[in-house]
Length: 141
Image (cartoon, rainbow, N blue to C red; front, side, top):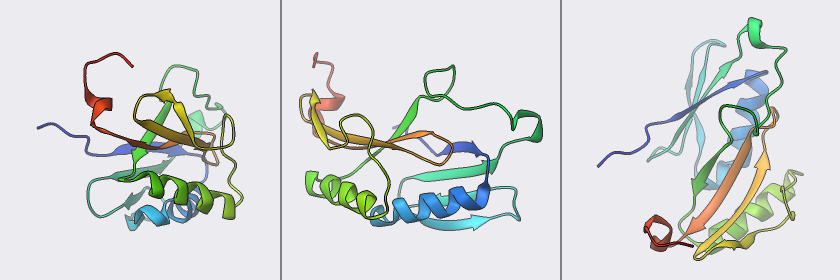
């Protein structure tokens, strides 16, 4: 069965992004797996998710990212329980990371789907989600 291998993000400050991702995603077991002298860093939960961070090329450094432009809109990480979702929201609040939208966990989006989103230092949106098996069905919301 196909699955995603990893997501790779170009970032303006590699050290800052490594610190951000490892601290905000620590409750989901993410940690720095390896890095290559400022060329990239690989962050993983050691199980089924990898985030590769790489410094943006000098030629593109002045371009400002926006999730509504062509390219990545956001990426989502799933948690196993609604309780984990709520704990992640509390963890982010303790780090001073603001939630987007209503600033809280939202569950009106789709049946069996609870979520919240926040931005990394480069304004890339990250969604944390808990959903039941209905999410992968072909039925309408």
